[in-house]
Image (cartoon, rainbow, N blue to C red; front, side, top):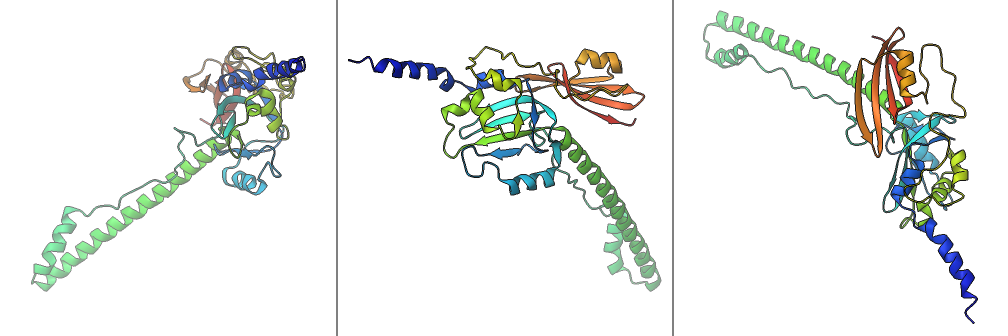
Length: 308
């Protein structure tokens, strides 16, 4: 009599693994994998907001405003490394190549404060003595000396303002450059709370289908991935559309040991953590200039060249 319940229960049981996905499972599935963006991405931690299931999943005026304000960190058709997936109460962050400049620890202020040149002791003494001086000749000489001291202080202030303006411009350029190198992110937002389907690889990829090409990862989502299992997608350095390396220069996707073999022993190295991933910065002195390269788990994700 209750045989009709069997297929219903079977369907419910089959659906449980998909609904039971979690942030750790999503991170294991996506982080360290390579995707291709289908649109320009702004160089800011504000990223691009996506509202799945709505009439306008992407607010184009806001999106265009961020591109104009922060510049383009990732261009349409470029490959990017998934560096972090983070689940919040009402949205999910899908971070690429570092997640966008402006996160904790990033310097975003371009203002430099400077105080006015203080009065010298001689200037203060003259200001106090002039009112008491009765000799007109001495008084005139003291006033001329005071005026000279004031003008010198004003010239010093002008020199300081010029130096500050130049320093601020350098800082602005540095922030602009760092924004272009800091990656970006998608924020998958929901009105109330994250639905269960949003916490599955297929749910994430469906929400971003118009904006990201997931390649082999899309096929892997045909079955649920449990925590502790690593998807068998293309490894990060095997970019399907990777550009050919120019002679003497590295290319995105190159392994760290390959970069060392090409560029020589680095003159400086540093490490930091991006979620569960280890990011290493290595600087090389080359005939082309100083190359600063960033590796995520030993894979080159970006580099810059500056003249020595």
